[in-house]
Figure 1: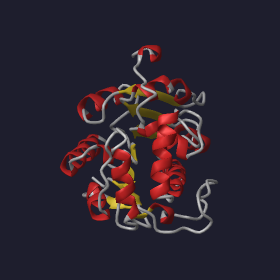
Figure 2: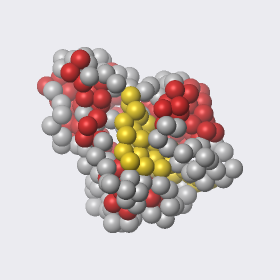
Figure 3: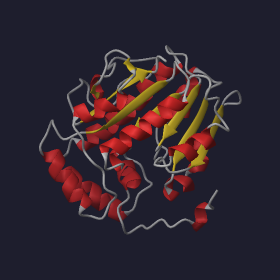
Amino acid sequence: MTDPDDTDLDPDTPHSARVWNYWLGGKDNYEADRLAGDLFVQIQPTIITIAREGRGFIARTTAFLAGEAGIRQFLDVGTGLPTMDNTHEVAQRIAPDARVVYVDNDPLVLAHARVLLNSTEEGTTRYLHEDMRNPEALLAGAAKILDLTRPVAVLFHGVLGHIPVLADAQRLVRTLMDAVAPGSYLAQWDGTDVVDPATRQAQDEYHDTGATVYVLRTPEELESLFDGLEFVPPGFVSIPFWRPAEVSGVPRLGRQEPEVLDAFGGVARKIR
């Protein structure tokens, strides 16, 4: 593993993980990130709500998976910077013996990985420094910690937009889901540009800052990532509407009442 002190963390170029951290009210960001984040918000202010609803979706889906679904193994791909209600925190509050593997290839996340490595005594939390675009290596590393012959929850939260070609994103998801046992789950959400035209304009302006490209897709394109799997109710929805009432002690974040946002996702089970 690379020494975090040796990684190149350029403070003068906006970084998506740091910008997201800024939108969530975190402190792990620089002036360039705040300027890029403010530019986005000026054009599309609902991004703050989307960021908070994204965290709520993670918390509610993880609570469902660890609770009602009985999952004890989690593979969180493209985890980003640690923040509130991280996957292992939610899962291990419900199931202390849960095993969680975080995957990211970002040196910034690597520098903060120690925060992700906290775990209950009964459970396990590990960080795997690997590129999600190399699923075979990702699976090989995860298999050292997780038993892939038993059900695993595979998580992609707001990260598949970083894979520009839809077919490549579909192939990545399919490779991981083919490798895990029947009874496993996929939980995924990403950004769209169908609710508010300002979202596309804001994203284009954001790319002009030099930040990493993130592709907005249609809900139909995002739903195709679940092909071959069986959706858990309420199915594929704008994320504030995924079980908006409290689930296993984890309430919704964001606005008091759910609203349709440019962020869609769901949870689905691998039957065979």
